[in-house]
Image (cartoon, rainbow over all chains, first blue to last red; front, side):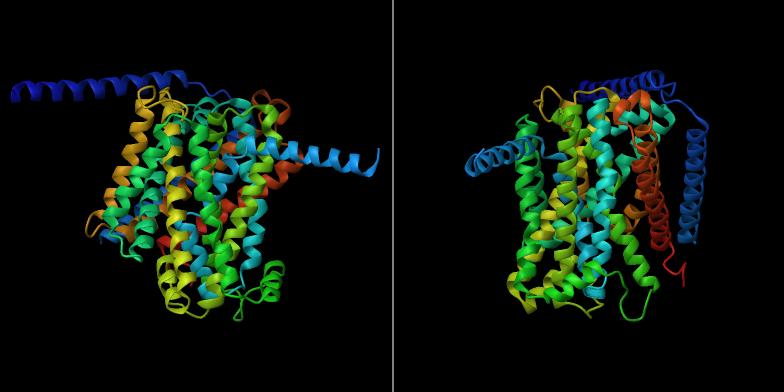
Length: 69
Length: 424
């Protein structure tokens, strides 16, 4: 009984993970190419956004490190 | 045409307009009143007790800010029939899509925890233990969605929106000086002592409560789920404007209540503390504030958990509509329940870092808000997507100005939350 339950849980979890990975891959393929026209101003905005987020993450990381100390 | 015929014609016209509005009303009104969530009510209560009526003018200024940002989601949802998460995936690809989705889920979940903190604190004032509050709230929230009808959910949400207006009678009960309220609402100024770091922090906090990332995602998804079309955009805008008006009205009346009775009490640091302190001065007003805090947390919770479930459903392609039964959209309702139960459970864990979570919400929200707003502006300028509903030059000037100000101030707010002495 326990063996069967263990098998059921293991195979269920394995299926769930496999399905989720499959779904994520499908989503990545579906949205591989951006559909908006990448004009200069849009490219600039996205680069600025990336820079902003990197700085913010670095600040958060610094805060985390100083909290640990 | 005689006078009676003219009056009758006018009456019919107005009655028809109201009828149409009542059919379309919903997403704008609900999102705006839910914007006055537990965190919002805490900010307003503390603003009133620290600065009296002195910052009322700033709250009035937030009306156009809230309207212009949220109005864009109405147009985008009605034209594309896509929620914001799906629109980002489609327009900007999977990198920005995953970033927005995962950040939204994290921000929403953390905010949901703060809503539960607010609700449990409010009902604790009436002697109700947190565990009972969380169980009751989770049951009501599930009952609201399981009947498989967006219309029913919306009408129940309207009831809770109406309760959000309790601050208006509460303000009348404290008999504030109407002259002072009006003066402080229209004349920009700072309290005696001038512009200080503390005032700056509260200005940023008030902006932070006015525009939150979940609002953008929620309203766009709600517009799609309600089935609004291009022809409904005008009424959707009216709905959003009325919602913005009420959100500012509630904020002003909340500040009036605490500003009248608690001004000069710097020890007040939460809405629950304000409600308890008010009970000692005027029991009815304190009770109304506590009821309002619970309702604010509840409204926030129903919208935030839906925003996440809609976003998940849009991206993963699961059935994701309140018009579907549980067996028709199991993952949609499962994710809704999962968010509710886990956020509620965290509040019940003894010694859970709730203060840290509250602080973290402000910081994590700032990582998502600029991206969500920048994407919104870019999408609204894409003629291929929006056609004749794309932003006009005037709308762009106003919206870009608002978005830049929000990004700068919310970033400074997050930095101040992380490093309290950064500007001293």
